[in-house]
Image (cartoon, rainbow, N blue to C red; front, side):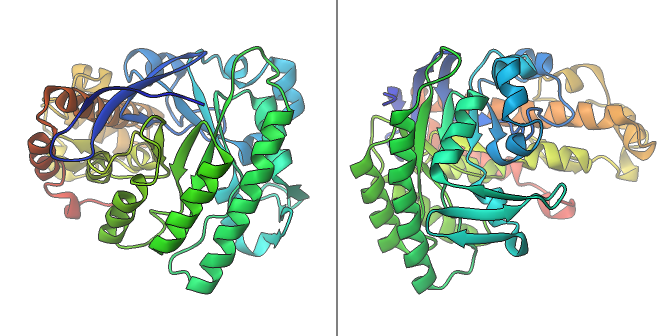
Length: 382
């Protein structure tokens, strides 16, 4: 079990600042994990990730790494850390979300899920046990269990069946984890995933089932899949009440800066989302004054920095005019510079949140920060 050490709590919310150890480093929370689905955070090299962006942990994906490069290559390389030259912690999603998003290409069964590769159409079968074995080959510090992520909207009767399936698979996931050993000498931890769609009784039942099994940490899954933001916040607030105080709490796949701050105030410690890098590649930059679209003609001769409150490599060295020029010219450097900035913005945001929690001023700061970062966001493209 991971024991999270709490350094501070906000007196006006459920926000908390903590830390926990892995063999590849200490993770200070709240924390955002850049998404490196295939063993790479798109358009950003590991040196920038570690030294400028100051990422403490990255997320990779079991489904994608299983298909390419495959477990044989990963084991020959000595695990994903060595393969990608990253000596900090890695969390791997189970691939459940990716498999279940295939819809027509997958078939759900009691003991697992059959699917066809999106790469070549080849047929594969994921069981909870196989997903654990793949993540042993990857060597991630934190592995997620195989679960079913229900869509939104989701009928109650289907959500009941899906939640039970996730709980049944959780038992098999944990048994397989306990029966197997790490391949590369460092500890691996396993998180359970609380499901239940938008139904509070199912969320409570799912959390209860997982706590009985006993995992190293717990995640909230199945949100940010199309439900209204207010419902997401309410369910996060409800669900964290059933998650252990002394273990990490992870909200999967969320989200915009304001979503993260609101979830922190509801007791969440860990986050991931493709939004900072995906938006960056589409020329949309998160800043302290809202989202800026760098293709906008008004930046053609704007020689100011992108965000005066940001200390990232991009903001220290380049102007809005230059970044716009790169995007309009379709230069690859645009993707790198924009991605560096957005990831730095996200990591700095959770760092500030941590500092404000410890100072005792989080709630006031959060409200003001949300007002600033949402300014003008409706004028941009996602």
